[in-house]
Length: 104
Image (cartoon, rainbow, N blue to C red; front, side, top):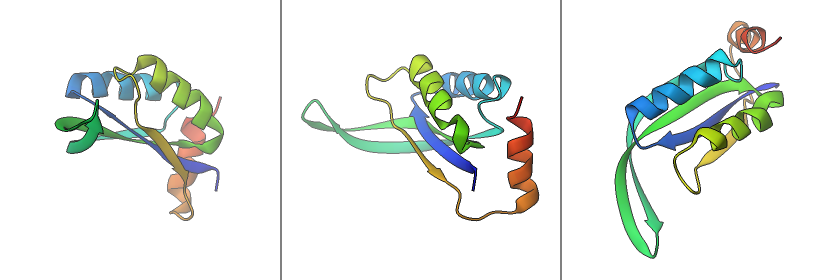
């Protein structure tokens, strides 16, 4: 499939909204969903936990590199989580919509 999802997390709702809007406006994403989460991780030798906003970024796999570059340029973290997967199945009209709104 030529569509997939990228994930990243930001520390606040406003930062997440700004990034989501930019990705959709630049046609790097068809849709971005924001979810409040709590993350536990090791940083500087200590276990930390913080509230974050997780972004589910639906796009074409051909745009992964450009979207990752845009996310990295706008991100607040030194080592941001930016991971992605191609879809293995899906409702074809939705997948077609992703392609349509992120093309040209």
